[in-house]
Image (cartoon, rainbow, N blue to C red; front, side):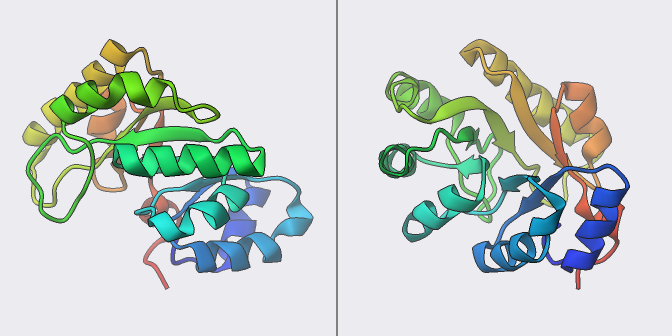
Length: 189
């Protein structure tokens, strides 16, 4: 729902959709306030999480898809404990070289995994990845399958993979969350 007005989100809620992803805290906060009369919605933070925004993101989102480093995970766990929150977290992994995206490498995640598992009250339930721009379907499928395999190796059940242009490949690989705002809403405002 990022880049979409609250009225467009309201229309999807009326059609039965309850989960929405946002990547900008200020934009999401305005929508959440405008839609408060709809009761609780399932808000997911899907953008790059800046260290100085952890507290307000935790206060507004039940799920974070973009923990991309051990220091950020540690900070998020500390602040979540201070706030009395137990957010669902997906760790962002970067399985192909892409200078525009961050995340744990496979080796980096495996090395940090013992420490990550001890970061209560975070509930680490899955992994998130995005295919680099320009990859064809034949290249995206093994990327998504590799992320799914890594999640299985770690005992994680959630996979946030796939966007409006590549969700079929992600779904075949086992994605449990797809980011299909453009397909649902059309172009961003």
